[in-house]
Length: 114
Length: 115
Image (tube, rainbow over all chains, first blue to last red; front, side):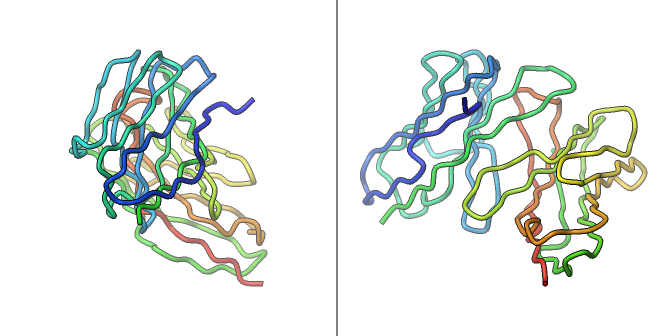
């Protein structure tokens, strides 16, 4: 019973393609996130969704579009993939404005654009 | 804007020796601080977190961290490392324990364990 699950775990695709990464959480959390980890292991937030509404879009190219069909799911769709999009993408969730808790991360999706 | 600095990119420690990983943060209000560990090819696992109260917090796998407001630091320690501790360690700061702003991460410290 994985708390935050991402699919696929690995994704290899050609430049110019469109791809999606799916994320689901079964923790009942209100907020979900996408983070990108680059080749130097640096983690940076991309998007934050609270109850299906976008809260943050941290200067991410508009080729990236998050979609949240319900508060348990946050998918990431990427159009016209570029070599620089190769990275590990992590989904995470948290309860909204709750003290004494934190963030739960998925196991990541390694995207390789060739 | 909040930021996190992990001054050591790599640290090499002998198995059985003690460990301290440094973390300094910049944040205008009371920070919510976290340490995560990432083993090769794996996701992020929470080691410990600090929100308030006792400034020395205990985590999993024998790790602890001490919050020092005067030094804006949240250093991670372990008295005796094991070969399985070799991994990437990330310090992070958030505006709340869980909220829309998410976490700001440091660039990580790569821990190498020598036999």
